[in-house]
Image 1 (cartoon, helix red, strand yellow):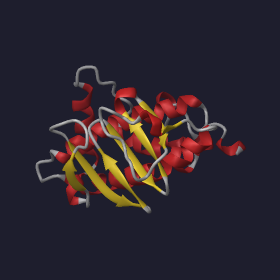
Image 2: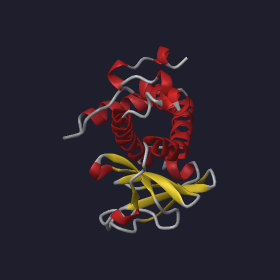
Image 3: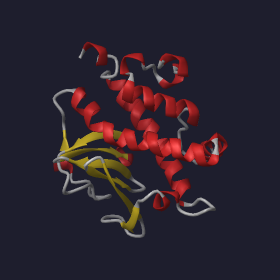
Image 4: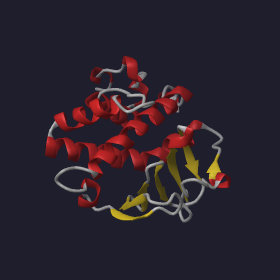
Length: 196
């Protein structure tokens, strides 16, 4: 537990939320890619949103559960619970059901679990982080890092958007959060050398 004490500081979860916020914009660009919808190409099923009209939900079976991506939330649900980033609230939470998943617009606040410690939130985040890292590696392998930098530059121009850190550093930060939390630094101080 002592090794993870650094990652369990509340500000790292705020950093994680900022990072996922930026990633959600990138995934939206993947849906609109000129070569076709990259999420569907990687196995996601596209369906109607259960909440907000005119929006889609992308679902993928992953690590004994499933990932759901909406424009307003992203999460993994399995084993009776889950983890979700709620974009309107700009926060990451433990979700207390793997059957009933968030409905954008209503959010079923009774299913937002307040963990007794941040270790629980950290552990719940792992399947979504595993997919995020895997997806970003696949995108980089296929298109090179210039594609995400182009996405990053366009995100910086979105009104009210708060760009996080550049995509290469962001991927390294997510890997460090996942694999070497004792080495993690705040994004503005983060360099790849911290997670060796």
